[in-house]
Image (cartoon, rainbow, N blue to C red):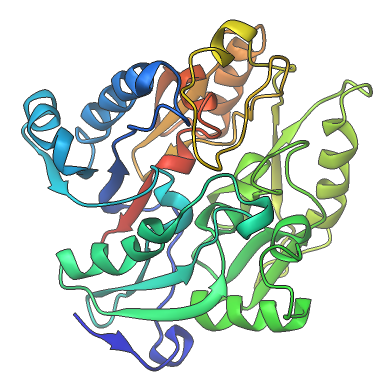
Length: 364
């Protein structure tokens, strides 16, 4: 394993679409009682179910701290690889390595970005994050994968790609002064082109309303196929998401692929307001510099925040009236894939969802 001093675009490496075939998936084990209610036990049970399901479709690596290694090893399926590793929390989508391929070389490479817990010293959601910031290189080291090191602060949930030269992100997130205050939009876009090897960058104005990550794209929009996206949508004008989604739609319809085709935009219902209860707030332990949950706070519920590969979609449900409609919509949009559902409120209570806690390894 070595750190490369070139750029992926120079070496003809690129990030495939998540909807393509994977060789594996990374997850991390939740533990912190200041981030996860009830000493993280409900979140652990849900993550265990997720890991044991994903491993039926692709290899799974589950990172666990030393104190929980033996217990977790007993509870997972035999084909889940459990590795002892250190981290601050489980959001591997955002601070884990992003993997690239070059089919002509039959190789994988990784990219390691900088991470500041979605905002740094003053606005970050927890402190410290030093172990998270080291994890991407450890992932590559474990499997002897060479990687590129970027000095840009970037989370994996802030971008999505179609594997055919297009990347989508949000201005709200990547242009936020709490990420890269000394870099212009043009400079950041140059990073995206160099490291993801894309020709088109679509900048949506905002992410989901009141998203504590600062507007990650993976709560509002994602690719489900080349030149085809899924966009969260509401017809309720009283919902702040109404304007956010329409502004995103206006931006998406401006763009065409290399064959001059417009993006196909599929809309999926946005769930109603889902809030944390006072009883749930009382289940967190005291933490050092972690975000304080208060009764009535909006939870980051979006049906867009799912994990997908070439055969299946691992889809969140919330126990609300829009669940059935969302499930029917996703089945119509990707009829060729199996849809496996999970009630994910226990992930929402930590601040994210299925996509936020997974990181795919593309198949060579």
